[in-house]
Length: 267
Image (cartoon, rainbow, N blue to C red; front, side, top):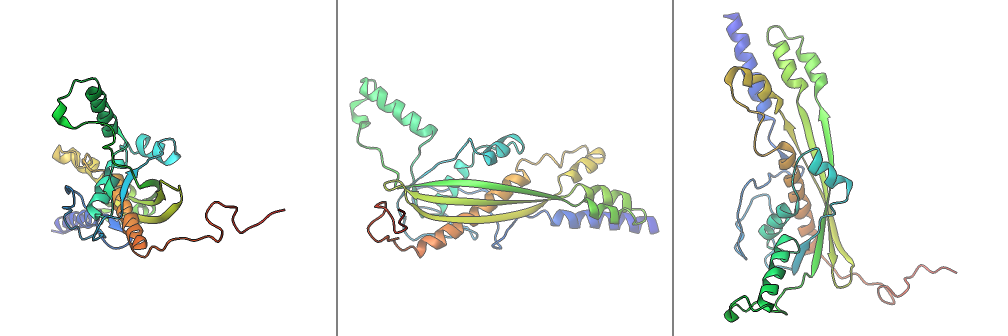
């Protein structure tokens, strides 16, 4: 009877750890795990802040030479953040996205075919139809990970379930990420706005490696990685903060005009 109770306690403990695996935005919401948007038809998501009308056209630029990008793609094995940001931005309805990546290369190829006379004349693919990007958004990420190994040392002293609980707790990591989004006016190259965001979760993927020996399953092999979910949540937080700041935007003025010498004089 006592062994049964301890076994039940172990199961409840593991279940409670699993409950801690929910990703949290520092602002209190959750990221949209899956969604779709088309044109101005952007479904409402509880965690997203929205604009009643778009503020202009937007291109997303990702510095793939930066250290954070190397960490993102090598250590965490995650792809470019550009598709994620495009989805979030279009869902917010604050900007109309213009592509400056692979889709642009395809569009240029279509124009080349048109110029060579290989496309029907009624296709209307010609020069002068491409939409300019009014603004460019640039992301950056800072990663953080904290191990809960000290908790495992305490739990190991619990009779019967201690060693098992310690194995689980010792492999729990608190994942967190801080993100920054900057918005630049393409015509003047003036930075219009910048916003930070953050999110965290509890990664208990190691729990799967312990249980898989009994179930034959691979609980740890989840398709959506905890790092990926945290990054999406942090970018959602950043975008929300950016949207809120843009709603209060006022034009910046410098006496004498921007770029005309400034007001801090030197001899």
